[in-house]
Length: 161
Image (cartoon, rainbow, N blue to C red):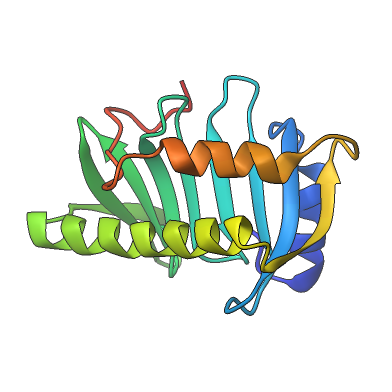
């Protein structure tokens, strides 16, 4: 995941799996946001280097990266994976989120997406770049956000399809 300013700049240029993408700045958010879509319509939202949310083509949350943790969807539940390093190996420690943790997670996600949607709808943003350069990525993002249910659903699996 991007961790330096130059990494974020590269994301717009090099995230080629996201065939449509835009980088923008919104009021109330310090870092640029990159939003992209794969060929199948699945979306990714990079709120700076952290947090990152990835959805499948049905608009269900499939993965997230927040505070050094990877969250992934498993059978409609969220699982957190934390890296533990020793002198000889790196392992991933898995823990399933409780119902309370999942609700809090989804409310935070919903708040971020709502803030983004309002900023875009109210034209309180600056478009920093988009790929491809022609077209209207903002309209595509607004349409995608408007189609989301009030509470984002969790995918059955972490893969994009």
